[in-house]
Image 1 (tube, rainbow, N blue to C red):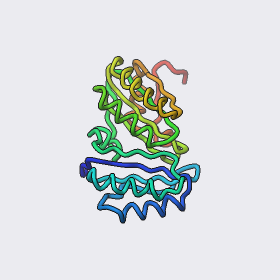
Image 2: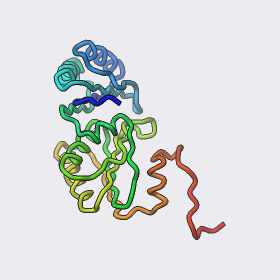
Image 3: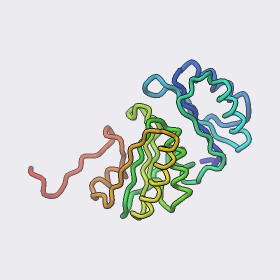
Length: 203
């Protein structure tokens, strides 16, 4: 996997504007178009990566052309390595420790909040889910670590989100049951989850 110093995401409420703007930002500077396409609720999501200067140029071209159709957006000029890997689909194994869950209405604000949490604490990012078909446009990030680190990470993330008036839901599981940890390690998507038999259940 190639490492990019910068990434940006743009979430459009209108598909036509999203596609038109994405074409323009690709032409503006030499960036990598990581992904783009429709997401739930009739939105369009574009994720770009590359050098800081190129991503910055394309990102601002998109802001100029978006015609008020942007729901949310973020530009990270110096992305945290763990966040970079999570954006590109890497998942980390859940071990002993606490789990922090951060749920937002858009993906861009979740990415930014996760970035702040990672740079401000020593937590691990287990997974980052960005507006897949089952999330209704939401972003979800899962953190793992010592309880005091998870508390600090969520404090940082929630302070940012609430300051920017983003709706956020967050919870901490102080000591996850081994069955839940196993499910998280396999998949957080219900359709991909494995059947779990707990000791002591009735036949």
